[in-house]
Image 1: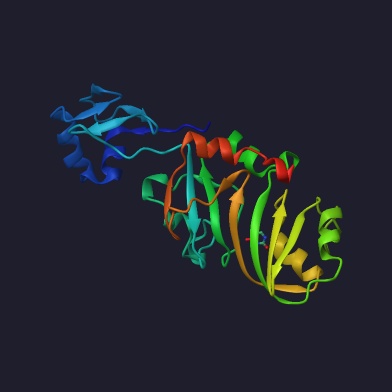
Image 2: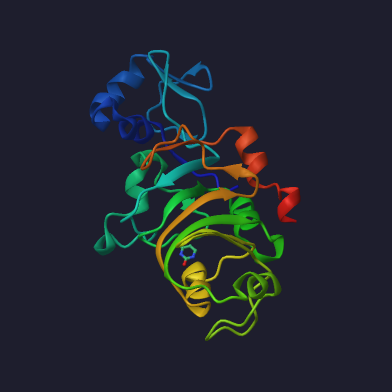
Length: 240
Ligand code: URA
């Protein structure tokens, strides 16, 4: 895990307790604890995941994994010229986290952030075949053999290898569900286009065995529980 340390006064100031100067006074007055012990040294290097409290109130720390319900219009880039960015959906103190893969600007749904490099790797590495489920709205007509072609895998223009077997179901006029086990550039859009359909809306509602939580409104984020993380890394039996 990529753990970083920072000065205690910087972390407390970042969490909204005032300027570095104000925070320095707070620390000297014994109002701040680090992992339960009073710390009067404002320059102390503290791990960002340490439990810091001010007047007994826990300071926000960086969780291992954060779940975000991405809104349409947000870019997964760090380039400010592309704002609004998905990082704007996170509290400032969490913005050093990285997203596990990317969703296009117009795509909504479940996006995972973490600073744990090995966990990010497990979420996005194609060899893990972790399923991601997309609800697709489309215009046009899917080819008659679309389900079979997805199941067998097919070559997308410009790619060197055929797609991994994917599960397509046609849910009603202009509505489909596609479960992918890899994450190529614009993959859903490109696969649908090759099958005769233009994607008009795209929503990711499951990664591994973790459904987008029903209590996570669009645009909101929250730390993942241990159960969420376990579900995220689990391949559901029906998708294996
Ligand atoms: N495939 C796409 O085309 N877009 C996304 O955002 C995700 C998967």
